Structures are given as structure tokens and as C-alpha cells.
Image (cartoon, rainbow, N blue to C red; front, side, top):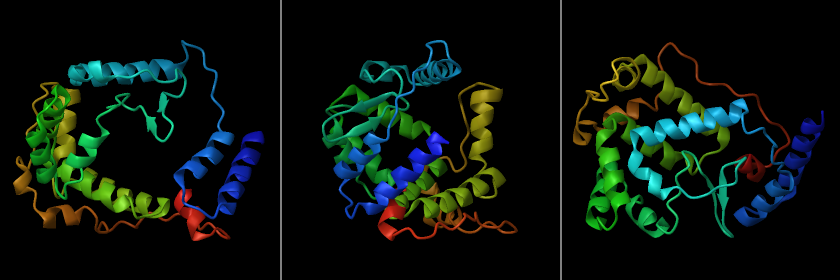
Length: 235
């Protein structure tokens, strides 16, 4: 009951704010934040450590880039920025390079920008990770992230529901199944992506992931009444 009351108060507080200033919104969220006090051997911590270990076993080069975070929430906060450290890798001091490289319009442009930098080991690691990933996944993920910047939560959930339906159906690409085979079943870590190269993943193929799935209803969310548009964007 107390949690419901706090959430209701938080929602009302956000609705009263006539600003999109992230510092102001963050201050309101902080006022309602409670850090959980968990036992070190709790299921939460065991799961977190398992995820960290799994991630670092796949990309061990990232170990040196880990930064200390608060033990419970795994959040690294600076005066102006808050990083959710998941998968617990914060590239502190490299945001200018990240912004410059990842502002490219396409995945190909992003990789090309990273290759032009080539000033640090983490850039080489990132390039290898991108080139190793599924071209289909890279392209649909980039488009989804870019569209999500201008959409509300409901629109984002509906878009991602369509994407997931298409991924699981495998009509456009069967990379999800192939990735599961390579990592979880055969464990050869040598997936055979289809298409194999980024240039073979055409825009028309990417577009299909964002269309309504035939014989499937779109995700329907309950309407939220009496909320201004500004509040909907924050929630």
C-alpha cells in the first residue's frame, strides 16, 4: 500500500512539472528513490554476478573499463549524468568519442567512424564486437533506438512488440535461432548470420520489422487519462 501511495505521489509530482529539464526531473525521481538493503548472498546479487561473469567471459577485454558503482543499484552518478552500469561497463572520459562516432546515420557509418579514431584499445574491441554481431540485429536496433528518442513509452513498447514478433517468426532472418544455437546449444560461438554482411541487410528488410505482423494484433495498452502530454513523455 505504501509503495502504491509513493508511486501515485511521484506521478502527481511529475505531472505538476512544466519543464523537460532532466536535472529537475532527476531531482524529483531522487526524492522518491529508496535504495534496497539486500543481503550479499541474495538471489539478486547472485544473478547480477552471474550476468557480469557471463558478459566478461564473452568480452574479457572490457574488464579494465569497469568503474566502481553503488553496491546495491549499480548506478554511477556524476553531477550532470547518470549511468545505469549494465552490463556494468562505463566508458568514463570517452563520451566525446562515443558521441562523435555513434552519431552516424547508419551502422556502416558508425563502424567507419570508429575505424578512423583507432586511438584506444576499447575502440578496437568495440569494432570487433560490432563486426561479430548479427547485421540484422544491428540495423533494426539502431533504427529502434533512433525512433525511440522521439516517442512515448507506449509507442516504444508497441514498436518493440512488432520487432520481437518478427524476430521470433524468423520470416525475414533466422538470426535469433542461429544465435541461440551458437551460444546456448552447440556453443561453438560461431554463428552463421543471414544475411552475413551489413550491406546485404537492405533498408526494405529493416522496414519489415517495424510493420504490423500479419494475423497478429498490435500491442494494446490501457489508456492513461487526465495526464498532460509532457507527463506522458516522462513516464
